[in-house]
Length: 270
Image (cartoon, rainbow, N blue to C red; front, side):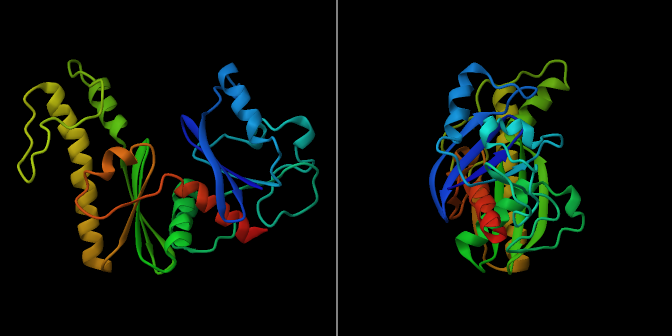
């Protein structure tokens, strides 16, 4: 059994795999200052019972270390983290951290790989495992919205912009009078091709943040397909369900794409 962990800013997504098959997944709150809350303790303990043979993780948090994985003492590796291929011998769970030097089943053409978020790279590997040599656009709608291209089996890069909550939070935080809408919803119901118009400040904020993100994504898709031809468009991340039925084309919603990519990277290395 392999365990994949996608360490985000507020949550940790986990996936348990038997070979290539995902058998269980879910998410936990990221421990505050390394401390597990009582409501999360049982869930954490269940990750290691029964103990997986291998654990691979990626983290968007710069200072996250293996000590914060809260391994039971009898399962902690004797030699620390592995970078690739399980070098050395250790008792307990064998650990791989996805980082710049980790061998991958795809090419990475990013010019500054040391600054590349490992979740973006793992998602690209997940797309490659799902669709083989097909050209893909990977949309990860989380704290930020990333739009990344996988072209002929190579990660080319893409764009990063504020996520939906970040857009709404920023307009509230950096102004003196703009409210923070309580929920993410587009006003106006179904309008077809008609322009939506915000009739209140809250509606105008929602349109600016939410419809603005949709138009941004659709524009990126159009430009990318003009250059590369038809693309498989994959959608993942916390706001995937909000975006999925509002984009005007076929979308593959794959909520566990990063976890699948991490598992494929692990299998590539062991």
